[in-house]
Image 1 (cartoon, one colour):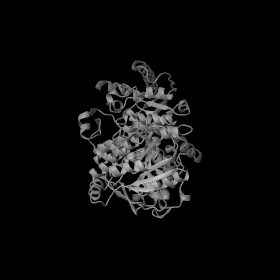
Image 2 (spheres, chains in turn green, brown):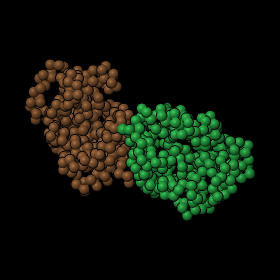
Image 3 (cartoon, each protein chain N blue to C red):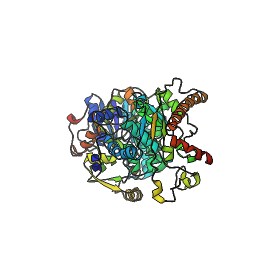
Image 4 (cartoon, each protein chain N blue to C red):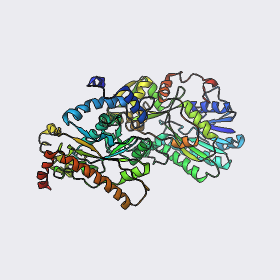
Length: 321
Length: 290
């Protein structure tokens, strides 16, 4: 298969692409950012500021069979809301329409479990059909939720034409990845809210790579939650990761983080809710369809954060197949 | 800091019992179950609660052998303003039933918003009262504790002591759906720990609670009024009830089964009160207030 991987300049796309290349697939990278990895196993196209015509041309000239959309959170949380919306929601919508026009065989999109929102009344084991409550408290998550809706609408409307899968993984951790939560856990001090210690789920990067490879080879249309081996409270996670706890009273923490995140020196405020209320999702659906099971325990996942310096180049042998 | 509690009294469990409990609950590699239960924290809490259970309330358990093996739904009467009866019942299943059983209580939806308490409750195995949680727990062979009277039961005043209020019906549907045996329980004594003369919904609203009880000691004596009266508590287990049928059957059909559970608990209460003539005598005074 010829697989178009978006977000190709990122570490996760690189890991997945290496695993896919090892399976004998042809990989083609696409990103808004310049490519930094020398070992990306295929050609790479850079599209600055999501130019529709340029992307059309990539589809026309390269004729991919499969879209693996990993670049959905382009711009990060620091980017301006409107720009993020244009890139993520409208960009994804355009990509999906291109998949239809070019009659691709399969689309796999990586979403996030943040769309469920950290809500005090969340049941444990949130299924895929649960309401997406993230925007109730934090409108900043609108683009994540809209994107999720865009993909699910596409998924059901065109499920006979293009089998599409939307994955909603929990916090993805690993030696190579730098995201909001892994950066916090790698830091010298990690914030927690005084009196709150909600359960968290973590997924190791290699488990995610294996899940993506299996799902790419499937032929159904579905939405799947993805979580790791077990659950662990946030404080225990900080201890296992080897960071020092910074206890903050929530009355002070929320306004402080809001201010700091506006100045681009802290994580987004909505993450604070995830340190307050548990969001435990159920991955029964993917387990009943695929042989995939998480192989790295939650303790090892958190310990692996310090395994190798995240920027060190990684050989193929390190990638789980 | 809390490890000092580990030296309080005898170990509640043998190492084998500990392993069995962990296996029954299904804890992760980090030692926690998905809802946040952790045996170490629960055991520490149990060491403290044991004093209340054994020395303060001098709890007696009748017919623990009636609790069948495997998952059960323990259904009891509710009383006494604060869920002391839930704590006593859960403790009795840990300390006075062989082998020890973790039974999950359901807490109100506002509890996760409470700092510290929310964490302590979850570590001890309590979960937010959500039908999804109950179903998932039973599906994983965990036992749950249900007070079908809800706040109507715990908030009733002393004049209506040991009078069962109307039951919710959801628990029977859940039992039918998951084919779980229902163990009726009668708890005697808890209705007299906080003899509420008057329950004020309006005052309760002010502090965001469903009701606020006025007892001979509360709020007149301040925090002193929060201390429960040291009434001896009896926990009576009844014979398990096995229901069969369609979980989606009509409300009338389900209500018939609920009535059966209610009658069974009423029987246990009558039996338990007859065994406590001095507590039963108080009913003469309670009747005056009805």
